[in-house]
Image 1 (tube, rainbow, N blue to C red):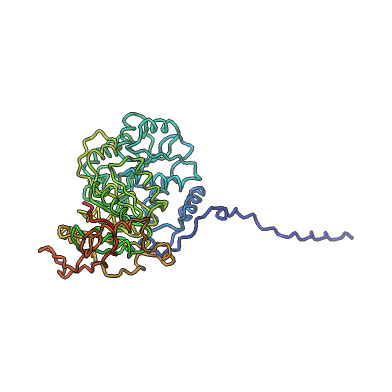
Image 2 (image 1 turned 90 degrees about the horizontal axis):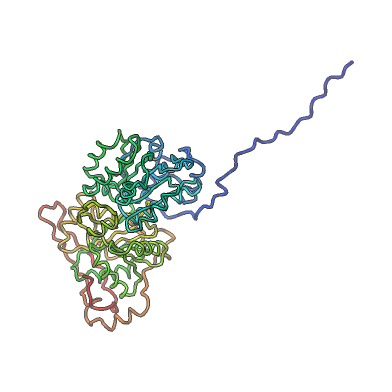
Length: 515
């Protein structure tokens, strides 16, 4: 009688091999624990993995400190990945740059040895910053990024374009020059992106942009990103874009995390007021804006004489010097940076290397492109003339939903601009209080890093000898409580008071104004 077959011994089931947890090998930066506003937190709950991006790109995204997409990124990235034209309007400092760089890097094929994406920006500083973001996010992808701007030698660009370039970042005039010489081949470039499109589509630059588009294939993707879109953008959209997907996250124009104040004073009181702000505020880093290059240098000199660390930058400086200033300021070498807002004809010619006749009316190019996360205070030493410039200036603080403070020094001549800018932006700039709540601009846990600035060296002692007795710093009377006379046409209540900062300490430099 045959024996029944013996049951085979049970084999312990081994778990199926799991995919490697690649996130564990990432070199992640320290988590940013600062509170953020709804400008970047009011999301749909998407994750970057939801967009099926290449793992190499995801590695760069996470190693750059990105955790999840911001609202503008949630709206733009999935649409951009389909190749559709995009017209996106979002606030400065909410993640616009990554919103077009991430899909651009995803769509670039590193195996093809030609330019596949052209990213246009209006300033050299913004070009350098944008190219650095490209390199940081795409460092694992093999995508080759090149930046080119005016102010550098054309020979270096020609040599670089002899090598493989996938993404070309730059200012319009220089790229047009390279394309016109046949050095930059854009005939196979399917992606065209404009950041700060409102400036790039101003009447002075539109001809340059249109000439560049003529070098590109007819089947291309055009993406426009900006905080403001003037009417001229509609003309460009109708002529050059194909049924663009429109994104508008501008229910309000100013950043929610930026608290805005004004101090009403006389021109001769400005330096004294600035000195008081330095001594009272917990400034991590500050950017101070003037309306002319001459005033930038004089004010920077005066701040240094007061004993505070200060850099300055304006459009008349050599590009290599400006680069060094922004590099050192970004790395925390000093706390204060004085910048100009106006750019002259000769500097525009150098900046864009264009043969076209560029008028001198373009203003505040330098305010675009400064993205320094440590800046928590912006001071308009000279109040800007228009809402667009004001918006870009105060957006230098409160970056990516963090807290920031914008203080405007207002003279009698500025009162009309103040009311007009408030009305155009739909905001109200409050009179500065005697004491500013630190929680409005200093993140929890950052109090020790943002202590009121201490003077350096012996400038304080020298100033004490030079100061006449009986007056405030620089021989100026302290700002007084004054009413701000409203324009006759304004609907704003007339009783707007400036609570003046406390008078500066007795030993405050020499009797000289930054004119």
